Length: 139
Length: 433
Image 1 (cartoon, rainbow over the protein chains, first blue to last red):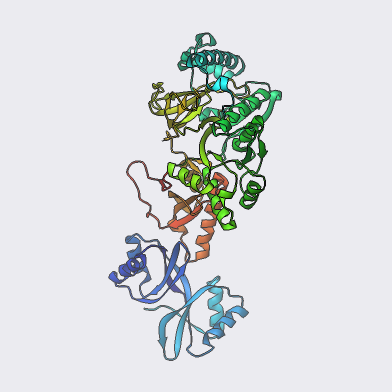
Image 2 (image 1 turned 30 degrees about the vertical axis):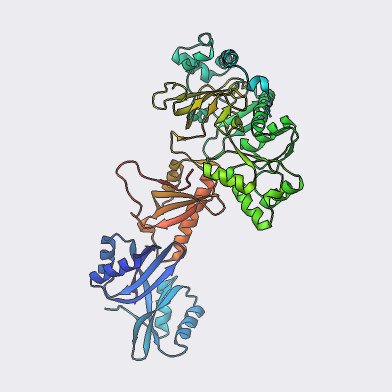
């Protein structure tokens, strides 16, 4: 299953992050994970939240440049080597990772890590074949 | 020194007689040889017979930069092609350039007016001229070179760049006159400091600086840091290149070599000639040029003219340092740039909006620092930084190809650049020129 991720273009100016998060908060959007990719001039804020479409609308209305892309939320064992197992699995099967980051979800000895891979369908197929669970949503 | 006392110190009356004679000769020649000018004059109902003194110049048609482009390459050539011994094209940018064609006599004349400029800057034949203007199609390098040779100076054709070598040459060959853009002079000062070279131990006495706008503050800074007297020089490819006018040691205006390049000031809106002392657009007519003579060329530079009893003894009319432009042309690192060029490039890049703002400042080395802020087209926004970096690199490359200078590209959020109801504020120039 694919997870929807929200990406927001953020200029490197004071207060811009505060504005984004406030807009989402006011729209009643609950975030589950967030990470920033930064360059000297701008950043891309990537967010996993419970209501991605509502969040997208709220952000666009507030004048932000944002879009929804699909990523994989991999459920893995919360123990040493858990992430390495997934990485090796992807590596062995030619699934290229563009970026990944962890989420706040962690229960019953399991954690969720978000992967943005080059070929999302291939990634999901490999996970399925190897009995690794990919979450559907954070709803 | 005064290089040509007869010409530079002549009485106003004598000079006007000579200018009138030269103008009639030039106009007659152009009317016969250049169909473009014959047509323009016919359209105005003016013939060579109507030109009998320099006062009649106002009857003649203007020439614009667009017309020079439209007639490229040889549409305005007034001599046989085989009579040319050198050509230059305008600095700047892609699109159609402007030709300057020089016969043997033109090169002699160029050397003559340029030697006068070196003389106005305190130069003599015993000086060592280090010429750090760019050599090539740009008129700066070779123009100064011809003049320094004419005067008989030892001429070091250092060209621009290679700053450490520049300073070594200056030290080892005891250069006394430096010719370059003012911003490059300041950059040299910085490199000299890093190399532990003290200008007080070098031999520079004068600098002839031009090809870009500069301020009085910059002059002071250059004079202090390089331990020399700074002189402003003006010229343009359309007329000859460097050598049109130069400051003398009085540092109160630039003497125009008006026996070769006749200046007028006009109202840019109406074309009406303005009286001496009034500000307006500078217009030049070449009086002695053979290769590519030009009638009443509209430079789009704004200044004013005046005569005074200059302490240097020259009677040549003076022009004030440039006060601005009638168009939106910018001079960035010595290159002419029009904002419309930037817009055209952005139009061709699908990932961006043609909404932009250009911010110009002088960096630590006093070189122009150009930042172009561009809005990302919303549909091309990506969650991957490498994709946005690719767009940025693409814009930077396209700008470099079009403008021939490096521009820092800054991607900004769509709609973040202020929209204006009237003329958009595209340029923020912090250079304090």
